[in-house]
Amino acid sequence: MVPFDLLEPVWVDALFEAAPSAMAIISPDHRFVRCNAAYSDLTGFSRSELLARTWQSITHPDDVAGDQAGADAAQRDIEHPTYTVSKRYISKRGDILWVNLHVRGIWSQGVFRCYFVTATRQAPARCEDCPGNGNRVAPRETVVEWCKRNPKDATIMLLAGAAFLGRDEAVAILKSLLK
Image (tube, rainbow, N blue to C red; front, side):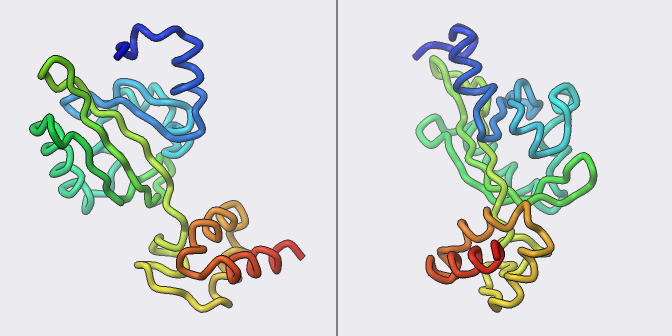
C-alpha cells in the first residue's frame, strides 16, 4: 500500500480533496491533521480552523464518551481498527448536526498512525428537530410540512427515509413538494 503522502497530487485531489464525502485524517492525540472541503463545509469551520482543533471540540459533550470509547478501541486493537458511531457535531454557527461517522484506525508495521474518518450527515428523520426523531415514524403531514420548511434537506431526508416510509410513500411526498 502506498502511503498517502507519496500519492501523486492528482490522486490525492481526486480521492480526498475533491471527494463529495466529508473526510478527515486525525492524529493519535485526536487533532485534525487533514480534512477535505466537504468536511469543512459540513462543520462550517475552515480547514485551518479544524487543524487547530480536536474532534472532541466539535462534538456535542454528551456524545464524546461514546466516540472516545470507539477511538480507544481502534487505537488498541490492530485486528478490529474500525467503528461506526452516530453523534452530534456542533457547527461553527452553533447548529447541532447529526452525523454518522465511520472511523478506521490506520496501522503501519504494527504501529498506530492515525484515524481516517468519513462523516455523513444523517437524514433529518434522525434529527431531534425533525419529523421521525429517534427512528419514530412521523405522520405524513408532519414530514411534508417539515420538507416545505427545509427544502435543502428534504430530498436527503426522503431518500434516506424511504426505508421508514416505504419507497412509494417517499416518492409520493417528493412529487407533492414539486407541484
